[in-house]
Length: 417
Image 1 (spheres, one colour):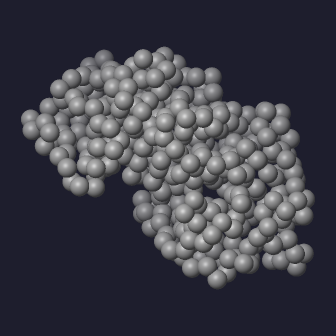
Image 2 (cartoon, rainbow, N blue to C red):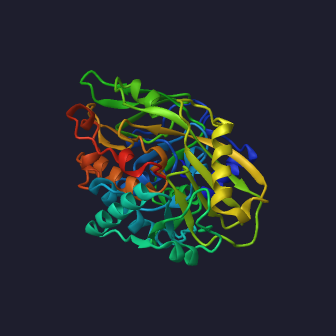
Image 3 (cartoon, rainbow, N blue to C red):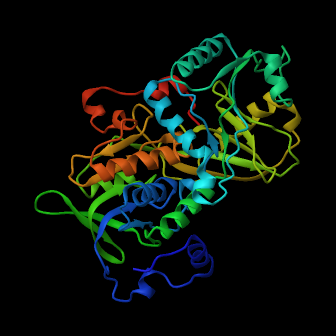
């Protein structure tokens, strides 16, 4: 099978160049793979890269129903942070931040990682107590986080309104200076190019129809629109489609899918120096490298596969942002979109083995998927290579929903962007 560079893949997507079937008219696989990764987003491509780089497993195919980076990786919050309350979450997300810090150099691809800081606003006594609890827990786990007074918060982010008569008065803020943002889809292209250079095959426009299992119950490969592709191991990392794919292997997952809305404003000169989040008003705001204000909210309150979402939710979010940052009231919306996020009952990921031999899953990240990208990809690759979880992702087992050992980050994080 021919190896693709990221640039040739982009060219194919833009120009309608030969697809898989045109290059191989008989639509039959030319070889069997050691590992197939389903889903060419940041997590899937990253897992393939680490399988090749760290574990020497290069006979890998990443299969994508559309084009690489065209799913949730192409429509996310861009926010990266690790100031989660519980030990399990803090370890995984801080591992991801460690990898983010050197990712551009490792991949020789600029993912535009900017450690501009993430500030979480406290608007009431409950917020103050909750965020100070977060800060103490983070420090015990070696995660940087510190408390700011309202005046310190405004000094760090001058557009912030800290007047006492504000609708949402600012009583302080928690700041993780090491956190920040990255280019939303650059990580997928960086991993794609690096994985391809190591021998990984990337197959686009090839929807997976089913996972085939043998008489012994173990995986044998995948049925696709291009034919059957054989593999010894299969890792599923396809946000918004994981449940559908896994059900073909008789594995049911405790997932629900929700729209997650966001928008960007018209571009302006640099005005917002950091990321600002407010759990109370369910909103966040940052500024992209192109000058757009990136604004988003929590997930919609109903399950749906719509990539539009409900308009009223985003209207309330924008209204709240205008109260916290009055100077942005004259801004105009440039575009709005919705991504589909898979959510578990405890709002924490499932990352590890399944009851089916040779089948692994990475899903249920909710609103935390992008920031976890390198950490999730690295630990998934470790799990696939060794058939045992990495110590960091060991708590994120599927079996926890049977044993009751839930992580329950939802109760701790409220809005987990």
